[in-house]
Amino acid sequence: MNTFFIVGSSSGLGKATAKLFAEKGWTVIATMRTPEKEHELTAYEHVKLYPLDVTKPEQIEDTVHKVLDSHDVDVLFNNAGYGMKCKFEDMSEDVMMRSINTNLLGMIRVTQKFIPYFKKKKAGMILTTTSLAGEMGLVLDGIYAADKWAVTGLCEMLYHELAPYHIQVKTIVPGVVKTNFKMEMSAMDGYEEVLKN
Image 1: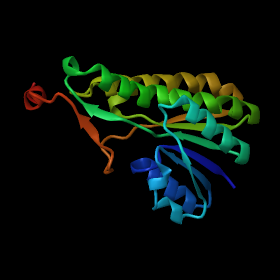
Image 2: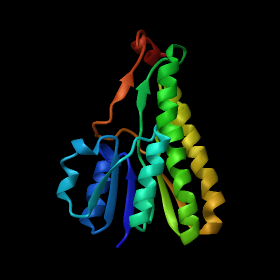
Image 3: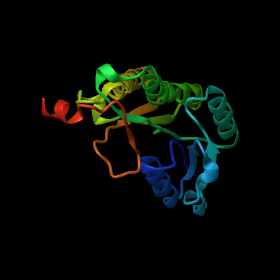
Image 4: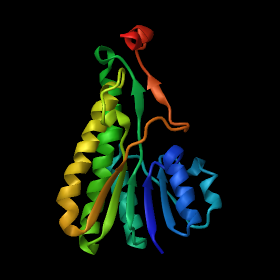
């Protein structure tokens, strides 16, 4: 049976992916910050819930170690994300660091834990959700766009670096998706004026 490790399974693409692959008979490792609050995915026989906050390196280490000790993972799906809309000059240090820590460093931390494992088994796939914001600069995307461009570039580099080990690297580049993923609105005075220009 194939096994799918999903980072960010509490909503949106992550939850939909968990349901889809569980229904197809895959074992799904569904990770999220607060698995104790998840009730929908617990109805699926093949879904296993684990705690994972991508901003906490110690928790990543612990969860990935536990999972790889008991499951033969075939696919890593990096899907955790933090969104925000803000004028560039108004971005606070806190918002910038939260965005970078989740969208870029979180993806890096988790992926680094899986690469030696996939190299050893000479197989595996690293799938990462980026965004149209990582393909084109859109107004008010601020640091979110920078994160997603960085993730896109990182995945392109990994595609080449890991190919000799038979590890596939792919990205999902969604536009607007109907989900409960919320974009934080920060320092939005003049928002309408920026959109007009």
